[in-house]
Amino acid sequence: MIEVHDLHKSYGAIHAVRGASFVAHTGRITGILGPNGAGKTTTLRIISSLVKPDKGTARVDGIDVGAEPLTVRSRLGVLPDSRGLYPRLTTREHWRYFGRLQGVEREQLESRIVDLARLLEVVPLLDRRVEGFSQGERTKVAIGRVLVHEPSNLILDEATNGLDVMSTRALRSVIQNLAAAGTAVLFSTHIMQEVAALCQQIVVFAAGRVVAEGTAEELRAKADRDNLEDAFVSLIGSGEGLVA
Amino acid sequence: MKLRARLVRAVLEKEILDHGRDRRSLLATLILPAVGPLALVAIFQVVSDIQQSHPLVVPVQGAERAPLLMSQLEQQGVQLERVETNPIELVKSAQRDAALVVSKNFEERSSQARSAKVTLYTDAARPRAAASGHRLELMLVNYSQELGALRLLARGVSPEILKPLQVDSVEVSSQQKRSAQLLNVVPLLLMLSAFVGGMNIAIDATAGERERGSLEPLLNNPITRAEVIVGKWLTTTSSSTLVALISSFGFLIAGFLLPLEELDIKLYLGPAQAVRMFLCALPLAPFGAALQMLVASTARSFKEAQTYLNLLNFLPMMPAMFLMLHPSDAASWMALIPTVAQVTSIVDILEGESPGLLRFGLMWGSTLLYTAVLLWGLSRVLEREKTVFGR
View 1 (cartoon, chains in turn cyan, blue):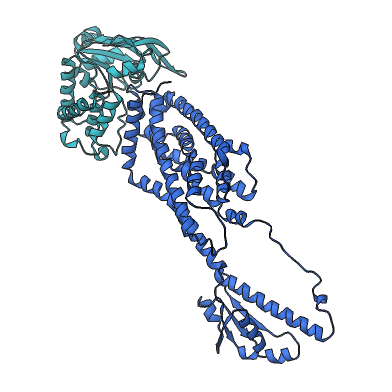
View 2 (view 1 turned 90 degrees about the vertical axis):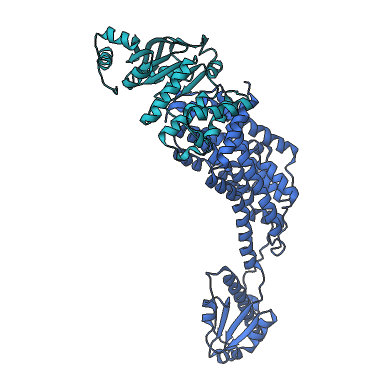
């Protein structure tokens, strides 16, 4: 479970996050939707302990992020915006490296890597260097890398960027299975179709604040619109920066 | 600050695996230390070739017109080749280093005690030919002066009239000092290899990681900045240590190959000296690794970092250059300044002295202290959000 309460973060004159609060429950997929520059990525970085908030708290499984960043990081799997792979390493080596950093035991790690390759359908890529990989294949390597320690909480920032339709569908089913198995998934995107298709809970960000929260149904009702797209535009105040 | 060995090792092993596959940078790194000793041997070969006393073979046109001069030259070891045509082509085509032409009226003018002309051909573009030409010229001038003195005596005039000044030049530097001067490149090259031997890794582990955007995913793991830094720093240090080791070994081999005896140089470059030089250069490896990583971490891309480091790498050379121009005796405080410490100690070692335990201790202690400060600075840079996310 991920809880965020009254987060604030400024960069100079820019007030990137101004009082964000929400909860991502265990076993559910929570979508963070908002235009570019709404403060989504900053909020996610505060949760993953790499950015210190000016004010407010973030908790992962009840543990304060600021107080015990290392414990929090071992309970999180974070796929950041930048995939950051090492071109000369193979898929297996990427996963092994992060598995070791996460403290996964050696034998357990090797069998976990094989399971992951089946799950993400990259078995033939396991011992190939990533330098020649397509965008979609790279994303899969990056996702596997943050799943290798079986985290109880998963943060995915723009996870489907650069994926083709088939890969996007495959990834969605992986995420759904993880949530069904009890993982709290926080899924940030600026693509509306994605939240509608995937998320049980939607948190709408605009200008550093949470402007609305609820299921797709609830959001439609709140904005008094039949169509989810119109509802978002109405909630955010403008459709700018969103992709249908 | 507690470092967990398990995590430092994971980083170290990953970096070694990753960089071990970077064939091009690996090759460049390993070639660097071999270049120095090879260049040294090559330079010495050239120098010895010049200084060595080759049998001077000189083609002469019109030798029969100056029998006295010819026998004088032959007495001094010159092998004369009597030729009919002008021997200038033999010098031009580099078959001979020098040639002589005795003028047609040589006998006539000599018998009248007037200046008689001989033409000396040589090639200043070829160092060896220039040296040979110089030797031959000296012989001719000596002959000329002796003959002149005899002619003056025959007329009852003291030859000293023509020599108002008698110049005696005395070389005071010892043989070792002079040879060490010639070998000033050794500390320079050895130092450089220990300092820059990990450059590619230092850049890739910092600026490269930023450029790829892989710092954020890496730091999302339960590992501290310090553990990441130490792992990467150990990788860089092992690379530069290896390079310094190869370099020292190369100079040891160079010591065997150098024609030191032919050059009449007494120089100390045996196994004991190679080990001592290596131990002197070694503290520069961790120091250079930390300094280069710190500088590179402020760059956003590999290219940018490379530019900074190429400037930075002039630093270790400066004290060496200075000491080459202003040789001075090593003082204890010099051991506290990295690179100055190395230059002074290695020069001493080559001259056959040992820097002593105190200087070794000061050198190692101070350098490791600076290294710790630099690593702390690096951890500060890595704390900054701009470094982790900014690209």
